[in-house]
Image (cartoon, rainbow, N blue to C red):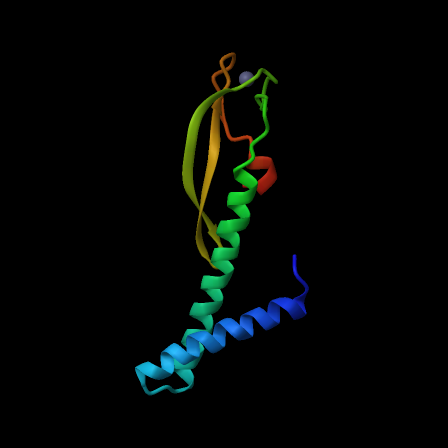
Length: 116
Ligand SMILES: [Zn+2]
């Protein structure tokens, strides 16, 4: 990941862009409005970071995932999307779902990678 300094510069540019748009709207602002915006924008950035990082991890499931119970090769059952609850809100997680033909267990090989 980029250094904190590099990220800070990009955040400054993004905020300047948002503020420029906001000024054209001409709405009155007080400290409560400003703080609400701080939290909202922070949560949006954090959430999007989570969405993209999780998508990168789950888009590459193992080639031949094994059943966590019996070790038999799993059969692919397509993808399933669920919402992870994070400290910054819900983040969608789409992952490959498998079924063990031997013991019938359903499993998601990405569970270990995302710790969910
Ligand atoms: Zn099994």
